[in-house]
Image (cartoon, rainbow, N blue to C red; front, side, top):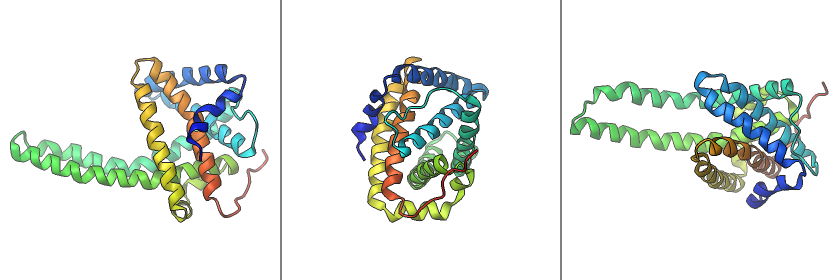
Length: 229
């Protein structure tokens, strides 16, 4: 996996600027519209674009960035990815809810604060471990979905887990690259308005490239191909 190439391959496409500008506009709508839930439409569009981009990368197209067209199909594909992402993150709600609902019983005194910090120190490592386990599983699921167009691939947990951790070194490298990329994007996202548009727009092609290369490295069994529609 070449992390530098993940940032630069879009420049091979002569139409990368308008494609990225449309992505940025949708990302801005998705970010601020999420407060009213209508932003989920924007995220579904971006995830649909991600799926098509991964498929193009796997196919080996010289200019893999898709054009912004056929929005209905992008919504369908991206909606499935968004639904799977929500399911993957449901277990994170349990410790968060427990912490929030019990924190009021600890009081504002020294003992209560100490208990709160202890609970937080116990919960955070569990959340990190869960994310490090499910991140690569979800990434592999997205790549398989891009090829098979079947939402069920996200929930083949046993196969995803065994495939990912059969190639532990490749998985660790991918996790490291994702941490670096997310750190850079988080800094960019902190820029008011501009960052909220540009960071998600750049994240889509970067995530797509790293996920595609990651899957190529670790997939060691033939997979069914997408059905013709």
